[in-house]
Image 1 (cartoon, rainbow, N blue to C red):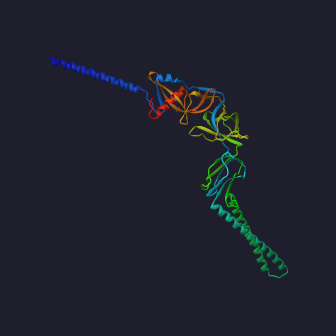
Image 2: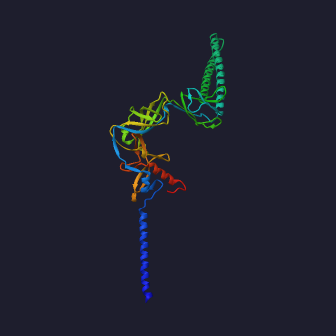
Image 3: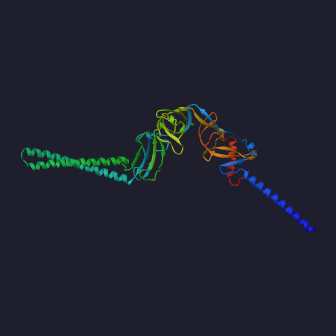
Length: 398
């Protein structure tokens, strides 16, 4: 009887334990489901970490600006005043006489090459000149014979048939001379295009313009194929300003309009005149490429400099600006951290790549990558970045 009463009690105890275990499992599952997940492009901060890193965020907003829009640009060489010299034939580089940054004059020798094609062209020219000399001597004799035949015919000392033969020989000699002269001119033109030095038989690559050497692609002893780049020379008195206009201000671009721009190496404001406007938008960036011509008489500006460009717009523009403190450069890209709240006062910060324009009064213009209303980190972004980079290091734990 006593054992019979003990069995229900044990069964009740087991049911209670199972119920408590199931409740705990459900609670853990619910907690895991609500726990924010991090990935390679985001990181989770607790409330304590946010306070310690002094992280603060605010919403991205748009503001209406006057009819001037700031966009990034880049100075490039003026291709109309640039000479990219290449090897005219397969050859071996004997000497390179210039280095990047050297000032050169028109006609100055830049590279010396040695090639079998040059030897053959020089031999053809010598043969052609010898043929011209031979044909000229024959033409001189034929002309003299014709004159003598005319005099003898007048005295009736020779038959008319001999006189007509002398005329034919003279015309044939003159035609042969003309043919030999044409062949010599062709050989001389070929030798000139190869830049052959008559004395040494080598090829000399000379600068067709006066300017600055911007690139040197070969070294002495190397073998180059036809068309291989050797040296680039550009005239820096004018440069091109390459700009990609957003769709919102593309209608303002017109040939002849003026662009204002600045560069990091000089405090002055420079000006460019729009030279060309592309006929279509870039499908990848949805921007309109334009090109301005920049006068650079003193050589203060250099190719490949980045520029801040101001474009006059026909109407006020809505632009997004964020504090400079929100900008972080990671993996050679410009990024910000987008805020997403989590339970318990924490937050998940998502790394977002953005394209920015110019900066003014501590704020940076955002061209792409964000939308109005999104919340981003504006203070403590470096702390978020440090924790994200620390997580990627092997053997480091958060």
